[in-house]
Length: 564
Image (cartoon, rainbow, N blue to C red):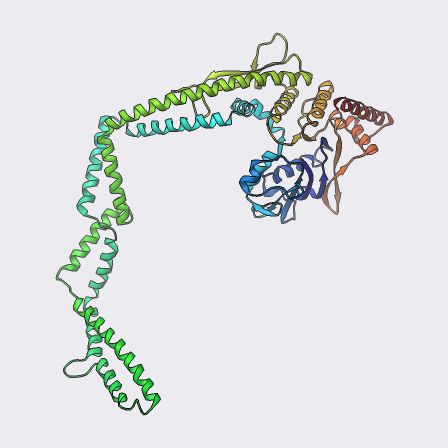
């Protein structure tokens, strides 16, 4: 469960520490006081999408920390190599920086927002006002049903088979073309392949030719420089070169190297210098002997580079790219030439894949229908407890439209139907549900789904919209029932729901030094009666209103004793 929430610089909340208890926790306050900001902070610390706009004006960053205790054994902990400490406590922290970056940690160890989100959704579930809109969207109904039935594995297995079938269909579509288009493509491929093959391309050729052109363009200067170097090193009939002169110096000093240690050292260095000069002399001679320039070679080379330039503009930036393109053209040409045989093979594969998809789809449909019957019964019972005994709820099935009557989700279209009054036909829920009915149906659905997962904390953000009177009391009782199995955090405006809470917090907004501040106070005894009276009758409290709030608390306590 969520035991401690620490908030810094989130919107109008400069700093707040909220210690939640097990059971039912309620947050109340005036409209705009910042109750939903607490929920936003909880969403941020479990990895939900947030924005730097959430940072309090003037601050450089916002921080939310959440301490969880009494955690279930989650596979996530093993898979990611991190988890609760030796006391069984888990501290999640998220820092939102003004430049848009996020820093997330688990017990001080860094983790990504994606990791935080995956873990957070296994620890805590937030039901906000927008979830009611999801209930109105038939596109979400199939997801609700599959989640309730635990059918994610069957659905993923079907999707794999469907994607294999779709890949085969795309491959076939690429080969299916009319004869005129096929002839045009064959002509184009044949021309391109012929042009590239005639060029006799070689990897690295262009770089080699470019280097050779540089040499040829400076051939005279190069020959002159090499000859001069060779003459300086090796000499000729008229003068000695550097190698001979170094040798003479070496021989001259050799005669006295036994007399002087300095002379001996110089002889050694001259020997090394002579050997090095001799090596260089041979290399220069080899370079001179290798300078072979044929007449017209530069023109031929320029012509070849021009061919490569023109091909490069059409087929790729480098010779390697052009060779890759040539290989692809050959493959495509072969595929078109053999397209009839290939299509026949693909059609057989597609038929087999379609048969497998239909088998898996039928298995998924059967499992969904079984899950739907169970969901209907549970929802009806939940709605009965929420003072909606006459409402009928049903999951309607219809086959998918389209060529194969399926998509990646399966072969079923599902939608939730309901009848709000006796004698009325079942109709799509989005067409007849009022705001109060929608809130209670969503609460019923959330309660049923929560039975099937390990999430220990449920957060409800103003799910009482459109609910009042007797219906509000039934919602409060349902919250109390849920809180016997899960930790419940609820933002509410209704005194019946707030009175049913085991722990009650007041969220209040004030001003100080020209700035707005929000504080979160845990209410006890008299302060709680005052807050319930305010929810009932407004800011001007009377003895009668306070007495009524006391009666509300006593009635709630009696109901909860009956649940024990």
